[in-house]
Length: 352
Image (cartoon, rainbow, N blue to C red; front, side):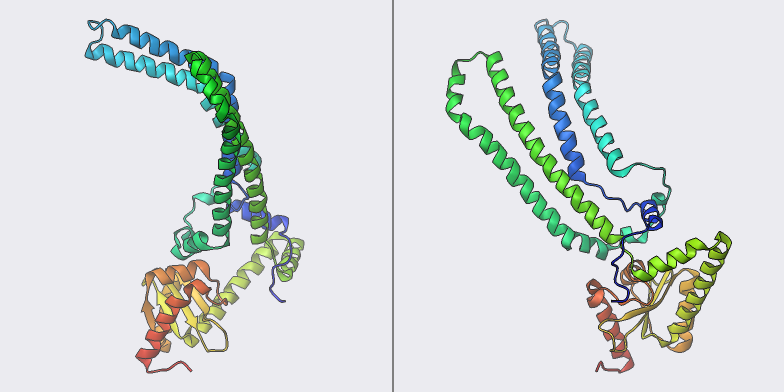
């Protein structure tokens, strides 16, 4: 089928996508690695951490036995000293988690200085696109993944605790130190298993994210051919060709404005011209622009008697999500239908 995106992305396409921030990454894989490293760090530094916290608490309680020392100023100093001990004790664990988070993100993203992400992007403010992200196929996968995570952790905890329930009665006669050691072994065993299960889920999620990103970057055969032709030409020729193509495209777009059924505006910054003749299943965007180009579209529409309807949310959504010559997506059918119905009603027209 013409225009069907069946070809893998070319290196140039991948580079452009990377500049725009289209990179496969998994928050679950990051969380799983951080969790696993955190548990291992606690197992390694746990005894030292416990000892430092115990010494700090013991020191504070000993000072409490001398009320004349514990004044308002002295109490603040005691609390700060205890807090410093706590921070120093936790530094190895926090540092290990921070290094793990940075390392796994470097592996996934391969950081590179990119100023494109700082530029404002109307797509990020598009509520309809956000709605699609929340309730689309990706949301179903995320929901299923969350359920699997809960079930996996619950099953691991149950599998670890149930066999040890009969043995918990033997802990009654243990000393506090022995009881703490036994409970710590049990908790760390459960945590290691949960982290391993979470790591498997994270790896699966990373595979899905890579597949999803690759699918979004696919190209049709014509795009691949056009890119190959451009790569064979000198940079000056390619630049001149792009400039002429843009000018020709803009002229065709402006020529289509008088034939539009309605122009939806912001009302000053955006303008999108729509046409619906019944031959296509959905209205088509025949022209769109911002600022000066939007003003020119409104001027041509006024001269041709094309209705202009101010609808800022719809105008922004159409401009951000629909290219010229493309039909509007399904999530915009309702809003566009209301605008067209209003235009037809005002003009005394009826849809066949």
